[in-house]
Image (tube, rainbow over all chains, first blue to last red; front, side):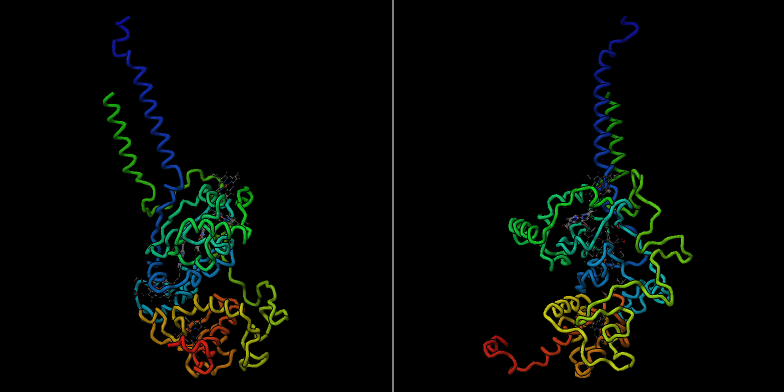
Length: 217
Length: 213
């Protein structure tokens, strides 16, 4: 028989099993690592038509998010400001700067600036900004430190697990309402923060929304 | 087997070098792996839509129409946004005279609301004290009204409301960004700021005078 199967074939089953196991692990690991919004979405930073910087406007000028995103407290949708809002200041500041040419044109013609939409949930998900920000959930939890970004980038995966991780334990994220728009706020003492969160949870009667129809309706 | 392992390692390296790590900055829009019903034929706010000739998904309301609205309670009477009422216009009804006094009764909650809105919408230019020295003055905003200017202190409430709503000279209006109720709240807070600025030492309760200066 040794003519048909040379000696090395004795080791073949071992190789096949080892190779298969390696390949299998690699495929699973690759899928786990890459086929998730943590990879596909986080870090998305499109080139915007105007080089608008949150760092300059929020950190340097001390503006509040609601000066521009003024619908965030009252609506499910956090609006992108109209170009007339920019012209409140830019009719005097950098009046003739080429960086702002598109803003001036847009305000004069009444045409919107074609900003690229970054955070975009699938159409079958219902999301509501007002509910979150009025219940002491800050923009940082879902958008990262926007106040330090020169160009906005997608900082959190916004996947279903991401939402549920908080909906199961909101007490870890609830903060005093006056600190919601202060993205630099940090609890002085993490253990006290949890106790405070629990107190808010009771006082405001915050629910742990895990049922599917909260977000899929 | 050695070649297989080498090839395997190489493949791994190629995948990682092409795909990168989690959180890497990219200009490419995210890949939707299972696009099932992610994008449906529905209109989302502020997005473009091909159905309309001008492509605007968020429609402006046509001429000669008014948006549907709920009345606001002003001192107990319901006022609709389209009514000729001082609450909406700042004018005495049917005239172009500014109302002398705000139609909204002043309360602690109104002042608190006004203070919050002032910090959001006015502070960048007029400064926390309303003296026209906000942070933007350092970067090229030159002419900013000082709210403690006697000319402005003497203006009727309706006129300042009108400035907040429609703007004046180089200041643009905030009617699109603030509801009428919020604009009256801001007015009340501006009046409180002006009062505090005009206050004299005699008006401070005796016990607290030592804490000043």
